[in-house]
Figure 1: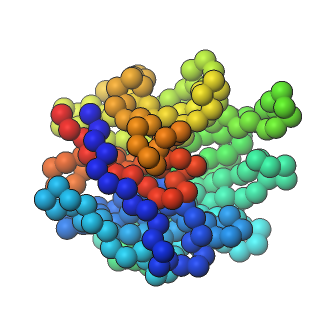
Figure 2: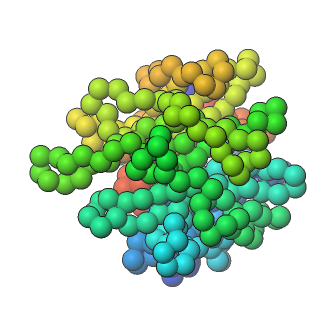
Length: 304
């Protein structure tokens, strides 16, 4: 099961533009440490991407200083990421780092919003340059409302992605808008141009409204394991779910085997946005707790 071992709390000595949140923690695995990127918001709730380095030694977790400057900032007026950028997945390829990130735009009627998937590239893991002012993946016939939270991995030359697909908005009895999104699958030959056919990876169960950020690991036996977030209308707060697959296409939900829940001071009401990774023979999970990571992010280790 997962053992929660540490919590990174936003420090006092950080950028004035990082007023709150360490949202969507995303790991870049380096030789001796793990660099974790996350989105922090300014006073207008616009987010930029910062990072902190994590060191694992003798069962202890230590952190570097909060990055002095953001590695990625919102785009120009009218662009797909004008109101914020969030990290989601990082791939090492041909001596470069490909960061798949989320670009966000406000909708006219809150909480309506629009998201698309962008790409930024780095030679050193510090300085990232946007591949294009336009997204590499946006709304389509299969994803009419939004696309967000890509999880990318390469397998035998094939780039594979699970991503969040927004399918509709509805109006609740109190008049407020409710989003509906689940997880779909896409693939690519180069990591830039993605093919979509509407294949659903994790679908809604009765009463669910949102299924968010997926994280996929392939184990030594060749099985695929996925952790993700989901919201049931009766609970109204995120929980972490789990699914298994033999091929990475067809998934079987086994949420009771997620083995992580709301049982600590930073995750008393909700737990969401898992990012699972392997480092020096151990499996770890990054996650956000209450209010989508307002105060920081948690770290858990898998114990058999």
